[in-house]
Amino acid sequence: MSALILGIESSCDDTSAAVIRDRTLLSNVIASQQVHKDFGGVVPELASRAHEANIVPVVSQALEKARVKPEELDAVAFTRGPGLLGSLLVGTSFAKALSLSLDIPMVMVNHLQGHVLASFIREEGKPVREPSFPYLCLLVSGGNSQIVRVDSPLEFTILGQTIDDAVGEAFDKCSKMMGLGYPGGPVIDRLARQGDPERFKFAKPHVPGLDYSFSGVKTSLLYFVRDEMAKDPQFIEKNKEDICAGFQKTLIDILLDKLVKASRLTGIRTVAIGGGVSANSALRERMIAEGKRRRWDVFLPEFKFTTDNAAMIAIAGYFRFLAGERAPLDIAPVSRNSDF
Ligand code: KG4
Image (cartoon, rainbow, N blue to C red):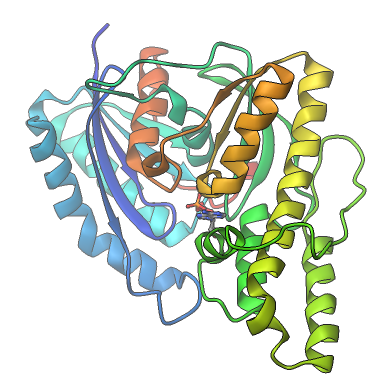
């Protein structure tokens, strides 16, 4: 069955709309909000107002770029959560209005499942390479750190997850502690490339099973920096590359230790990554290296699909639409993954 789907993403600070025909992406428009940059983080109320201003032009552009008229759409897929409620409400309400006015069904998508399925987005002129089922996905973002077993585009089992901070949060907090700005991941990634990852070591947690913890390593950095700064107030400035490299390596070691364990326990060797932190260059290199060493079939999303985007919502919605899933008009967004 052929399907033309409009995807809408508004869970945090990116307003995005994408159109896919079957699995092929026709357009993916993202309006990143600039209003938060003076606040060192996303301000929820400002985010929802910016979504309101952006949603109509972003959807129009996505349809225009795809050369698709609204009447041609078969369904509208939207992010139901997890995320900021006010932001989610804008995308959800817009999807409802579109569904009513065009008389087409709505399909709800879990944002995290969108990240996990990003490997299935096809692009014109690019070779098709997709994970086979079952596969493991290391889902790493500002709000989540999970190892997910994916048995089909509709079947997900969380094998392990963080018991405190998400790994993206650890990057962001480390950056804040060192006065490097927000979001921290890209800054630390860049500085770490010029640093020695072996010079400074940080404490690794001992968490049973496949769960993660990142608050200890953050505290370890905090005490380390505090003690060194007491001896030399220029310590961060003089050593920031090595500190970032060491801290980043510790986070990646923690992520990979559990991923390797999950692969061993399940016998699954097809491994993908997704979410904002999957843009990290050292993590990507390490995934390729581990893949070679352990004969894994590794899937890394393209950079443009690592951050929040509607293309992944459209592809996840496509699978749900084909499976016959439809969202009722009175559906409400949810802020937490556990509320689904
Ligand atoms: O998935 P995402 O865009 O937003 C949600 O959390 O939903 O992820 C954002 C997170 C932030 O914590 C940011 O610091 C991190 O992804 N991030 C990175 C990199 N780029 C973004 N972390 C490490 N290295 C990067 N290159």
